[in-house]
Image (cartoon, rainbow, N blue to C red; front, side):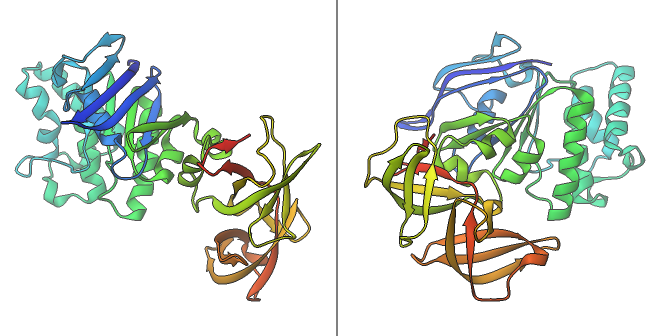
Length: 359
């Protein structure tokens, strides 16, 4: 096991900078997830840690040793890619043992490692099969097993579940989480799926445009985002954002009026200096933070467009009087059958025009 440290890591392709001074400290045995939209630099960061991409500036250390100029094979890492990359003419056992056999690893030790990996991943009964006779989930287990047999200090996962269907993705998330608990090895996982990030990570690194936006535990990011991007990216359905303006101040906090809703005013407590009266701001409300009229700080009339029933929970896709889309989470037994309702805002977040959180 090992720590992984990135200090001011930069990546340029020619004059174009795609990673801008990333600083990340990953603890020994921690499960870290890099998450963000396509093109945010998360896979590039992972490939730089693996040594598959040269870094343009900064420093990467694994287990306290700077590895900027160390070959990938000597970094003590093992990588699982999006594609399974299995040898089609080899059995599962041969795929698992191939790398060790090519490096001259003793036969007895190779057999021990392969057997252990197969037991951990519950693929012992598949050892004689070839990849074409395996399901997608089984192939992904073999790909992970090929990494396990190397007994690395750090596991790197590059969107390993994106080729699987929805049911298999859920199953493999559980398997990978269980694997981390069993091995206790440092793992770095890249995904664009915030649900994977929330369910797998000890901590999440949220990236946008090559910048680290925020690092924290899943529920800390969900409950206490630093900016509008993190607030909107972490959570499904995402946080609702409603335009507003500051109309005054009182002892409890700043008074905010929602755009197009003169009677809908929220008092938002702020520890920092409050924005001036007349300032434009954005109110953020998570779907589950809407309640029945009169339950919260402010009532908001909305027109319902679509109701999505998901069993015990339903989502109401609606519009405010100003035409802004909102998603409201309700208990399925309390979903109205009218085209318009008034909901209450029980909890909200406040952001300035640039998207920075006002606390």
